[in-house]
Length: 171
Image (cartoon, rainbow, N blue to C red; front, top):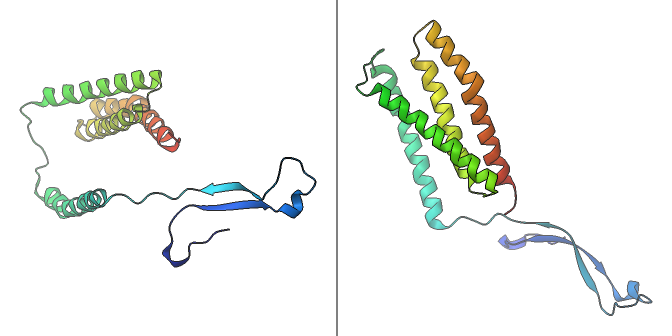
């Protein structure tokens, strides 16, 4: 087994080596042959720009943490939204488009369905969250919970599974 000495990077491979002495008498073999038993592929290191973008996103996420406290203590308990129906219709329209796009791409065997599935799963979870947290107590809340548990979260789980299965498969 080949090691990684001196910071050497690359593929490691276990090999079965058949020597000339072992092959005497066997026809068709005139030299030693290396047969790989298993390859351990190493993940390539991301490009510098990708690493920088990744660290920028981490920094932005960390910068939002204090803002969460400001929101938690500063937002009013109730608010009136001028375009409430447009917000909800728009969210549900995006969900419908996401489900249709994911379904069509998956039915065609297009691997890009993973992208649509991940985005759609996110929209469905956000919808379930806001439906339940903005519903009035009583019947509205019960309806929001029923919708979340009966439709939105199961569909989000299905979309998430589709996305993850595709990402775990080799291209």
